[in-house]
Length: 221
Image (cartoon, rainbow, N blue to C red; front, top):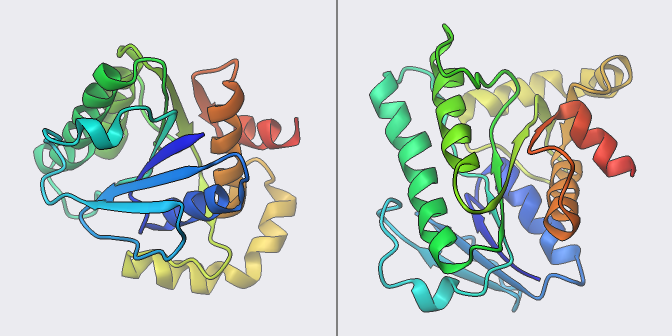
């Protein structure tokens, strides 16, 4: 399987990259983003692209991809809706449209978030924009799946790039094992998320939108 990862230097993307490296059936990993992973593994090729709304000239390098894991995202804190939409919706849909033309049979997995608003008209800004993004992806000629994790526990030395999230994870670390027992369908690890995404890439899934409980069920199947 040949895979493409957007946001491979972020917390979720790092987890997906590690699981791809551990999977014997993943023979080629291409990462695409504004920064390189600098991985030394021969399976990994980094493509650095300052403008993530345009992919002209990358046709030969991205043709034949079997699955794309779109893990790119930013916090909405302090952002106005048009700016957040430009980063969240415009970049994601531009990538998906380009890939759908090149590889219409591929699987496209978008990491959204718990609480995403599919109606696009709710009161919470980030949820509306994520909902618009999901709906746009689901209309494309791709095998598109929306992953909506809630709390994500980083493992394997992975750290969030967002300073406030790093502080939150440090403070919550002693409580996470207890919270996982109390709320098993609310917390996933980066390892579990990566494994679930690979499983959907291999076999598909009965639902196009997967909440945290669905992801946990999928891992256990």
